[in-house]
Amino acid sequence: MPSSGGERLRLQDFLPYRLSVAANAVSRHIARAYEHQFGLKNAQWRLLAVLADEGPMTPQRLCGRTVMDKVTVMRAAQGLLRRRLVRRLANPADGRSHRLLITADGKRLYHRIVPLARAYEAQLLAGIGGREIDHFRQLLRRIEQAASAGREG
Amino acid sequence: MPSSGGERLRLQDFLPYRLSVAANAVSRHIARAYEHQFGLKNAQWRLLAVLADEGPMTPQRLCGRTVMDKVTVMRAAQGLLRRRLVRRLANPADGRSHRLLITADGKRLYHRIVPLARAYEAQLLAGIGGREIDHFRQLLRRIEQAASAGREG
DNA sequence: TATTGTTATACTCTATAACTATA
DNA sequence: TATAGTTATAGAGTATAACAATA
Image (cartoon, rainbow over all chains, first blue to last red; front, side, top):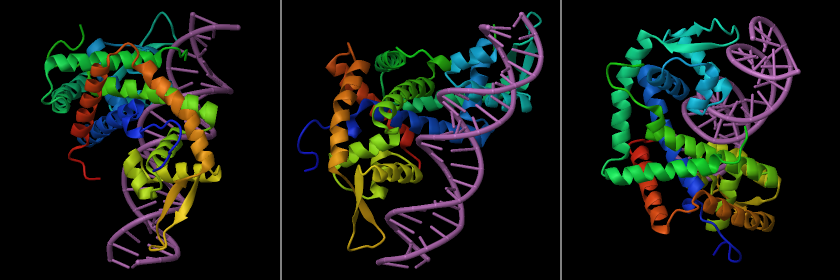
């Protein structure tokens, strides 16, 4: 009988652990699939999706929208630029900044991936009711906010 | 209006993305707190918790119990060994293998961390009912299993 | 001076493979 | 030969800091 006295904690029941394991399994699956089928890293797929859905935006704003590090966004953008899936839009008013814009090629690739992404999401949630899914999403958001609260990055 | 034709996907509503963002925020918080207060990396904390709660076990089994890479377990174990928080138990029947055993120092440290871990978990779930939490955990497990299914690695 | 983008450096976790010593 | 543990190497994401160009 290990750890006889004092408090104990089952890692298997520790929410941060379960959250991490689940998220990693999902991310790893997607990373492998999209890398294999489309040559896109996770970070690149995130950028492409945001640019396709929300229009041109600066690298700085992309960091916020994708919750990724500045360096990660930089490297992902460079890969997408090299493949001509996005291009730069200069900012006449401010020579320092620019916006990234998805190209026609980028949109085509994006529209090939969307159905697969939806299908995988459905597969993850197979057999779970719509109300349950909504509720799950809400709790996930609350946990995310609780975890993000009180950090000034 | 970006992405006028074809299917679109809001990254902000894409479950794998939300899951990843939430898990990363939680993991980052813990990593910083425990690194700062106890000098423990996430991987080291996982090992310590499993060894404290489940008793001595081989590195191989630890990989399975913590869902971490072999190399990650190796490096984490080396750190814990260096600090005498765990030690090796030789296996007389098989000279190749051994088990890792948490030491008295390791247990002391573990028992200092447990209340903090519980408190943080409670903080993440503040204001959420017990039944809701159970349900959330169930769905998380289902998603994890759906994501892990069909990989032989 | 402050900010945008960029590069450099380092660290963690992961992935693959090679190596050792036992079996 | 196969396996447990170990080490080497490389990649992705993160964190910090430095730098150039512009404001």
